[in-house]
Structures are given as structure tokens and as C-alpha cells.
Image 1 (cartoon, rainbow, N blue to C red):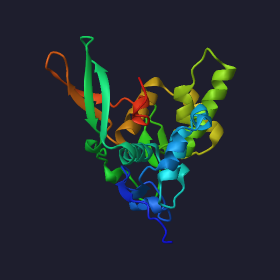
Image 2: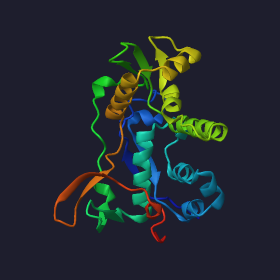
Image 3: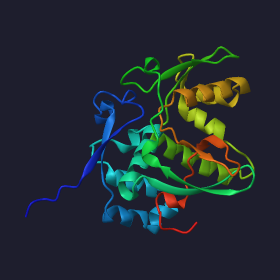
Image 4: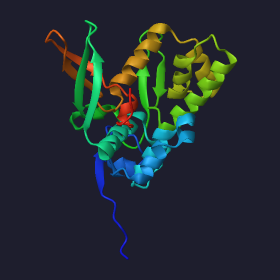
Length: 252
């Protein structure tokens, strides 16, 4: 009996593979995904995965054909893979409802295949290295940072969960993320010094760094436009990730 060949598609990564070492298959700038099957439906309905918040990771790991380190994927590439996986499972049409500024509910059907990868300035990237420099506008400190990977996001989530449990009335989101993003301060990669710098970072510098990171980060352009109840076009609306994204038969 001949082995059944699953149909696959090759997806372009927003990073173009520039942040991955040459030894990684991801450095080619593409990744191969198989179409969603009954196996993936089992994953999507796994109560344990849903409860632990790992259902998306388990789904993508199951669908990726390319032999690569999943935890190495930067967040923007992972977003592109997630949307591609949704298309390969349920098609490109994604019906949603949007409330306009007049309070009216507008039904919109998005075509997910029309979403494009964000344009990146390749001159800012050193091929094979996930490393960037930024001079803080107020303190003039040079910060070396990286783009967060899937593994980094898991560590941040676990750390924030622990901090929230210990200090339920405080918020640590910004500083915790920065401590994982920044890998050196004025060329010094000492972890204690990085933590001290982040905790005492000037607000103007913190905001400028985060704005810069957002600007250069490869990602999928996850926005759309629609016509509101007065006939005006509303642009730049973020694609909502509600339950129908991966469970299209669910009731909102």
C-alpha cells in the first residue's frame, strides 16, 4: 500500500528568514505547512490544551512540515503561520461583526488571503542574527535588543503569571517584556545590569524603544477596512481573534 501524501503549501515568512542562523531551515524565508486534517481537529478540541493555553502552539507544531525548531520562530512569523494554518483548515473567508462609532453592528466577511506581510527595511538586519541596536533619545544609552521568539513569549507568560500571583495589585508587563527583549546595555550583557537599567529606564526612552521595535518587527499586516453605518470607510482596524477564527462553527 502506497503512503498517502498530505497536500502542503509553502508560506513566505515576514522576516524573510533574516533573523535565523544559516544552519536553520527558517533562514530560507519560507516554511512548509500541511493542510489541516482530522488530527488537527483533535488538537483543537483537546480540553487540556485549551485549559493550558497551548492549543495554538500544538496546532502549528502539528501542521509545520519543515524540520525546524518551533521555539526559534519570532512572533511575527508565527502570526503569519497561524493565519496560513487557518486558511488551510477552513478557507480564507472569516465572518466577523464590528461595532462602528455610532454603535451599529456591521457584519464583515474578511478574506484572510488578502492580508500581506509587512514591508521591512532589510538594511537594519544582519543576516543570520537576531540582534539590533537603538540609541535612547533621552539618556543616549545604546541598547542592543532582539525580536521575541515563541520560546521567549512562553517564558514571559510564565514569569508574569508568577508575578501576578505574588503581587496581584501591580503590573509588570512593560518591564518584564523589556528585560527579555534587551540583551545588552552599552555593550554590557550582564543580566543584573540589564534588569537595573530597565527598572530605571526613562519613560521617553522606554516608549521610543518600544515604538522602534514595533516599526521594524516583521509581521503580517493584520488590519482591514470596512464601511460604517453612515457609508464612511474606516481603515486600520485590527483583525479580531475571536472564537470563530479557529472554531468557525462556534456560537459567539
